[in-house]
Image (cartoon, rainbow, N blue to C red; front, side, top):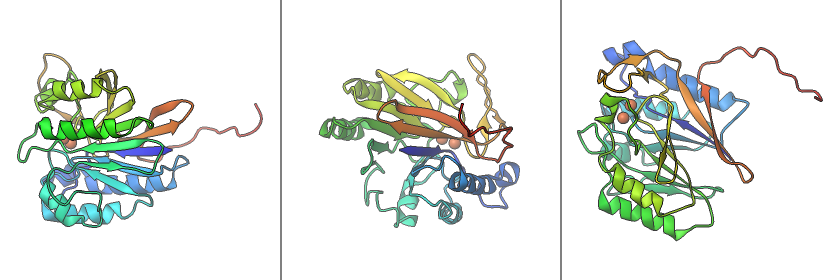
Length: 267
Ligand SMILES: [Fe+2]
Ligand SMILES: [Fe+2]
């Protein structure tokens, strides 16, 4: 099984200065074309939040058009830049999204159970889960222990060392880690929000953030609490599952690049 994780596409209307700077729509189109034609074509795609930049209806209209270009199922998670009500209203065909309440859902039918959590706090950059969602997560984890689980959520449940981004982090990350630590069949925790690839240990398993398809956050660690962005190349993650090796994560660029050589004969 091959899962593509794309994140933080931050779609904006063309006349927005943000769109003129980062070209997020063209870059997500590049990503769709790349994923569709890749030698490593995924079975399913997750967009792990910050789907649009300012939660305008017009931005979600653009997003809908672009995600139709993906030739495999696409699952949408909300980020702090999203409006969960609008997302639910404007994507009725994404019927895995609950009709009311938080946008938590589980994707079934694969060797892995995929549990998606909504960390959005309306109007705030931080994320939060709260006892109700953590209780739901615990129940989902208890409900089946035969298959490994991947948990997806926008805000990473760990401090990254990028101080300014950590100030916009998951407020109840310790409570989340406590629930995770009760279960030994969680293969990975997959997140967005950081616009960089970062890994850390959380509750006895591995958590990973995904780069953005639009723009990356400048790597400024420690005391430096400035916030910047860069034009590092758009990237996404490929999570490759086999029974033998478990889940192995690769990163790939969205833009095409030259292949130096490929030897496909006998070694
Ligand atoms: Fe973002
Ligand atoms: Fe975010």
